[in-house]
Amino acid sequence: MPSRELRDSSNLLHVTAHGASSSRVIAIDAHPSLPLFLACHESGAIALHSDTQATAVLAWHDVLEPGDLLSALWLPARAGVFVAAGRSGAVRVFDVCKDASWPVAAHQIAGAPLRCASISGGAWAAAAGATALAAGTRDGRVEYHLLVAELSSSCDADLLAFKMLCGLA
Image (cartoon, rainbow, N blue to C red; front, side, top):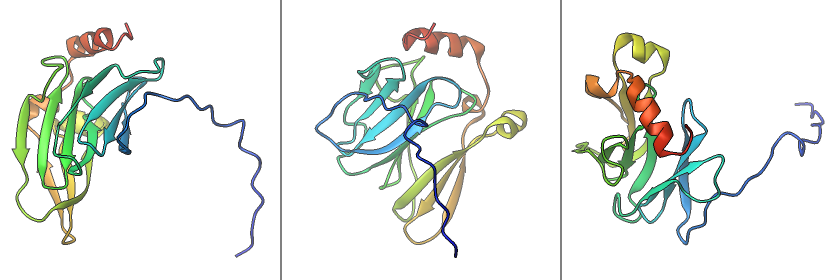
């Protein structure tokens, strides 16, 4: 295959450091519509960061056991709601507008340990009134877990409250 020369990309990216932790960051998920992102730490902690602040806006410690946390994923239809998934199949649902200190629900996915997870959604999910957690298992299966309708429907009041909580309004 012929090689192509790439142009210098040093002017394409602007680097800003956010927070510091003694625990390694293992996953990051950008908010679908706000300048925020979640950082998952090997220790089982999750931190909510804003593009405009160097320190975390919110942090949750001991969400899952150290080494178990796989990812934290924003739900596309609900501004302040995200799901944390663990390798053990543990799922925690956070609704920051209802309770900024701890998950509002917990679930255990039965079966093989998880290797990866993703949230399906976007415009089609909002139209269909459905959001799903797709989970890849260690034995090669993909499981599709539909979330309750309450988590799939948009709420403008939640968006404003969440923006205020994060210092964006």
